[in-house]
Amino acid sequence: MSSRSPDLLHLLREGVNAAIRSNLGGNSGFDSSSDSGAYSGSNLGSDSCLPHPSVLRGLLLSYAPAALSPALWAFATAPERLTWTTQVSSRIFSAVSPLYDELTEVDGYGEALEQALLDLRGVPNRILDVATGTGFAARRLKRQYPGAEVVGVDASPEMVAIARHNAEAEDLDIRFEVGDAANLAFEDASFDLVVAQNAPPFCDEMLRLLRPRGKAVLVYSFGGPWVELVWSPIGKRLERSGASHARGKRAGFGFYGIARKRG
Image (cartoon, rainbow, N blue to C red; front, side, top):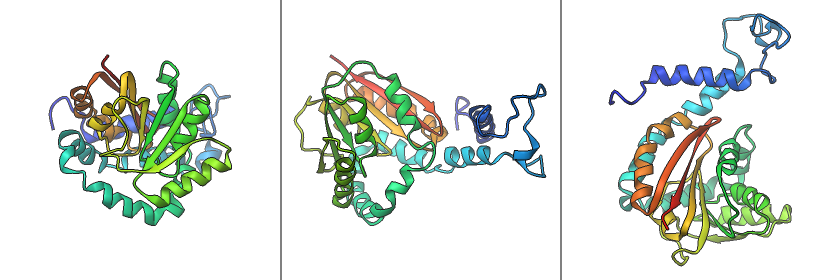
């Protein structure tokens, strides 16, 4: 690992500090009425040496998905060799589709997406949610931009069926289709905003679909430190694909990146 890359010990220390900071003042066991700045013993339990459960949870959600680093690096450097993964992931997610909505209910799952939306500028007219799954991001985007046309695409027909049901239950007008994220059946420059949450970064395809000055957003709900480690090659891939610049940022347990197409 290069001298510029943080070592694991540094990352773990950073994660502990971030988790503690994010939970101070909330239901974290921090006694705000005390001048000592210590955790209250009633919430920590009898052994005050143990980390608070919220800290352990933050570390788990931030650092457990270590496989994100090599996977995202591979997609950033040689996506043309990984197009076969769409069919594999389709079978896997079709099998787990009845349980997938339970993952989206994990506290903090949507935080990176929320931060990305706060960081966006302008109001898009046409939005694509790539690898939409059960439609979590598509529904949030429709609520954020009610006047926009929102389209969600996923390789799993079972996921698409659930996404349609979820949108109808919330009375949201969203179009869902079955499609391959690596080769989507849309015309060039046909969207103002393309979002991919917890999906492979098919940067070339995302930028192809964007209109000039449109934006591509990559969101990862968990594993923020690992995504941060490989953001540089992802950002460079986005720029080679047509982005004028790409920037990324840690958010909660996850990470998001935004790239604007040249034009």
